[in-house]
Image 1 (cartoon, rainbow, N blue to C red):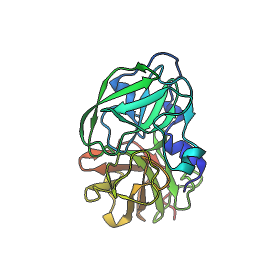
Image 2 (tube, rainbow, N blue to C red):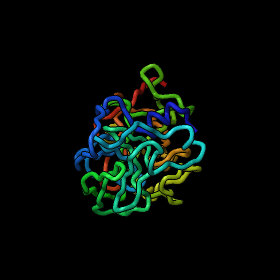
Image 3 (cartoon, rainbow, N blue to C red):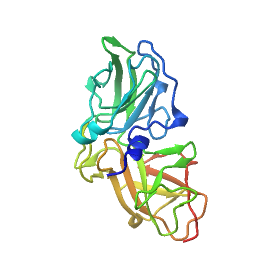
Image 4 (cartoon, one colour):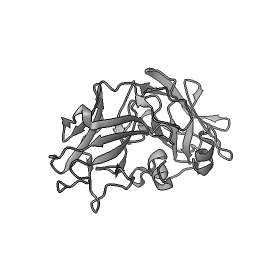
Length: 267
């Protein structure tokens, strides 16, 4: 299991560059303020994906998953002391973080592709009904800033300018939106063991827009100890060029371009 700082940075998905100021009003949000938590972009989502709602009056308190959830292995649909609950097609969504201006939640894993209706409740007050479109997979890599992918060395240390990824090294990427797994993920429960994504056959990692060899992708599936979070273990080629742009792809859906990981061509 990763250290608590990684839990905060990845599972809660609250990058400083994406935060919104809090507000205390009745629930107010729009279709465009519901975003993929990894990319911070509005649009399509996937089952078992971490998503974020920005708005006003979303909660009466700021609360987040922490030690209790790590111990119990389960995420609540409502935090005691907070009014917030999120429903998609009347199915309650597990919550990672709630505040007046932002809510992070898990799209229920048992939902299937199609147009769904999302609502936020604060006590007895209901926000607007908003349509969200679900696909099998909508891949996105978590970022530490608008241009940098979060990646770690095999020992769990972050890849940084001081400790960059190097040729032939195994690194770990963190993603959301990779869809169903085998065995299937259970909504709200932290993964207790590895489970690969169902769509392994059409999953790709792109380095500088070129597919990485399949044999260099060791694992693409849920991150044990987390919910809605996926990890991808890859071995870098010995001849990559810098800057090292990284994307992931499932079928026709590709993560945003223009994202890089600190890397050095010196072994």
